[in-house]
Length: 285
Ligand code: HEM
Ligand SMILES: N[C@@H](CC(=O)c1ccccc1NC=O)C(=O)O
Image (tube, rainbow, N blue to C red; front, top):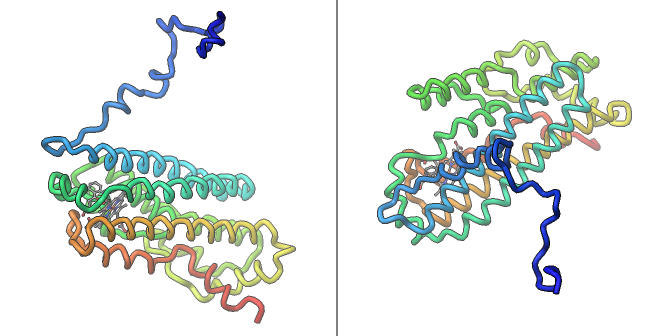
């Protein structure tokens, strides 16, 4: 009887099994490091703490990719390549979908289970995620006060300070639109990019022009809708976080010292691209 008939696949003669001195799957991906970087702190170790760690680590990996794509999108806009920039944004949107869906896994953690190891987490909190904060900054939610959280970690402080000083994705988009001849006001083009982006009524006519004459401005029109998708997706992530927190710790204060649910609720009032929403009120008269 052949091995196939015994429900076992035969290895082909060409398949490399002597890996000595070669690049391997594990070495290329640094799996020895990645898969030994889960260190539960509960004593005795709680079964569900591994899930809690992996959910955060996978999110951090995706945040790293988001930063990579967003930085590239900004650079492409600065070099007038809107089409390529929108490819980056398309990928960002897909990653956001995965990050939002991922909450469903952590939602299987019951309040009783979480309470059994929450105490071991001390004052650590997602509030201290430097990559999350960098993504918020890249999208326009700048907040100088956040830098102090990282004052004891020079590399993180440097990463976030660099992000704080950079124009946001929206800044780069509006600069590009200005170069394309749209009437972007000087107060936008000259704004201090370290400040949170604030709604600017004098920008609305330029956005209205894009939406009203969308056939003539098709790529800009598409870009605006992509940005709205991106903001939508970001809010979905925030909302799932809030709802997961509510079902897991109720109205308890957070380990990071905030009020918890109330603090997260207020993040839902923040907007990255306010004029893209304002224009909707005016469309169609
Ligand atoms: C049971 C699971 C979770 C609970 C109970 C929880 C709870 C909280 C609370 C209460 C805060 C407010 C800050 C504080 O006082 O601690 C917070 C902030 C935060 N958490 Fe979580 N969290 C959970 C899971 C996650 C996961 C999986 C991530 C993914 C990285 C995450 C990322 C964040 C971020 C980025 C913030 C800051 C949000 C902001 O500044 O608006 N959290 N979380
Ligand atoms: N802030 C959470 C703890 C928490 O979720 C957490 C703890 C350490 C590292 C990341 C976390 N995730 C989100 O805040 C709490 O208050 O229970």
